[in-house]
Amino acid sequence: DKYFLLIDSVSEAPNVQGVLFREQEGAFLSGVLAALMTESNQLGVVGGRKIPPVVRYVVGFEAGAKTVNPDVDVVVAYADTFEDPALGKELTLAQYNQGVDIAFPVAGATGIGSFDAAKELGEGHWVIAADTDQSQLGAEYQLGVSEKGVDTALFLAAQQVVEGAFEAGQRSLGLAEEGVGFGHPHESVPQEVLDTIAAYEQAIIDGTITVPADEEELAAFQPVVLDAVATPTA
Image (cartoon, rainbow, N blue to C red):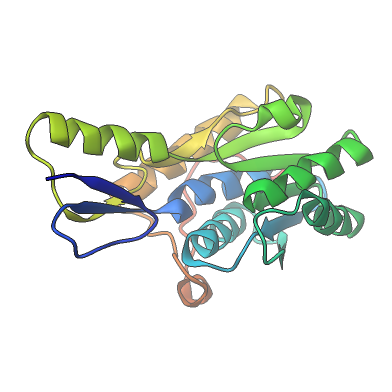
């Protein structure tokens, strides 16, 4: 007689709703942002553990970046932990020292270290946050946020319970359901870049672009370049 919401997993129990997010769709938009804003054509990703939600973030980010800037390189490192800010800082510093100017940590508390690395090196080193706004860690270094609406999932499930319409089983939330997205752009991001991000968001919602969700799909991904979009600064 109780209902449960399960995040990032699914269950066959008759009173459990399992929500999976299409993190790759929001990450794609962050990749577009990074590829248009980079001055070095070098982007970095720091993953926590190599699990499906993190992989979806990573491949979506790379797909978006290379769609608008084929010359960009994306360097990926996995920390194998979500709980080590010091290691996150070390991995991000290594990427910055290789020429990366925008880092995308998808690593829980380990990602705090990415902000520490940006603050240590100073101006010209950016972080795109994952899941939620992390400007409290360094607003002047946060270029944007690849958002994941765990709060949205909770609200929708609670709404179903209130209305007597709870649905067990699997639920998928992406851009169309406002379960993921891009937000909190830094004030330095030009309007034309924001317009380009919005155009790609609509193309994903419309089905014009299907964002890869794993490494195999990324390898086979054929970018769809939209007309009248911003060009990279590099």
